[in-house]
Length: 445
Image (cartoon, rainbow, N blue to C red):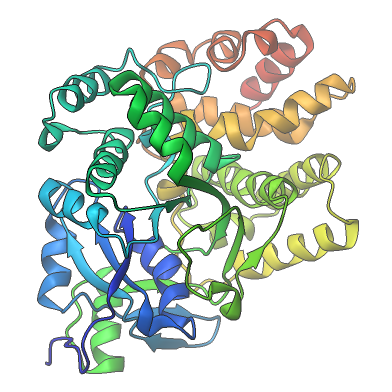
């Protein structure tokens, strides 16, 4: 069985990526590889911290098989946009790449929790890892940084010192206004380290807001065997994804970008309506199915969607969320229909356990905005109540296993819905009608 090898040289590196995982390889790396100017845009990608994936990909010349899994068959491609792969702990390579003037942009897929935000949404400077990064950066010891904001500030400090020029940072995480989240974390950390560096960042770095979408389940041993049979190559790290893909961006690229728009990316002046549509309908719907479907013994999205009870509460949640969306009604209806079609594909095994992870970070973003808007109108949204109750049941051990680094206070409070709400939003905890509805929903389970 042959190992994947390049037939032609890798494209020159002009982009950096942090978060070398399956989603990135199915989305940003695919868009870059499919763009008509792909030969000009190589990516140097870094893992979160572990070197394992980078080590495997390096043996394969940074190539991998992308399996596009439709309802009836698989189609395979080999994206060639990864020119270099590095462990997240390779700080020398990180700083060296940021120094290059030809680097035009950096993309991020690091999850919500990685931005180290405090209760006010800004950088949590009480976080021990953040404090350690501040001390390391002040001392000029960037080798020791551990957090995502710390790594970005270390890279930008190296760029400034080398006269590297302007650059764009493109957050691709499922967060409202992810550019603001990334930018605020970077600016606040830089300001604590070196105010002059913070000013340089303000003059030379743009933060681009995005909405990203492409279901990318974890790769299974069955997938490895399937790829070997389809391609004749022994690929240790293939990626399985769905045919659908979406990328909406808003912001400035001062040093240029690949022609992503030629392969379907959309550039808009206001990303918020699209962001809310995706976070509330897709991500919020996913969270609902993860906790509710998991409690009913389902393992995948397609299984949960086929359950009439899960489907009924999902439609109720979508109705509630859609009332507060500003996109045209026909567009929302089409999006809902597309979600049902995508999620019904039984060949995409998107596991509920994967979706349920880090609920304490996701629920405030995906569910609470609709709940607050509905309560401001005097409406008690049954779908939102159901999601919250299902999540509290998950915290009580009634659904998929808990995988959430920040779950401890919520697990400790899970016996009392009011106490859980108090951790999420004290104003909601004071809402007697909401608390009563949550109690009743939990009692009915």
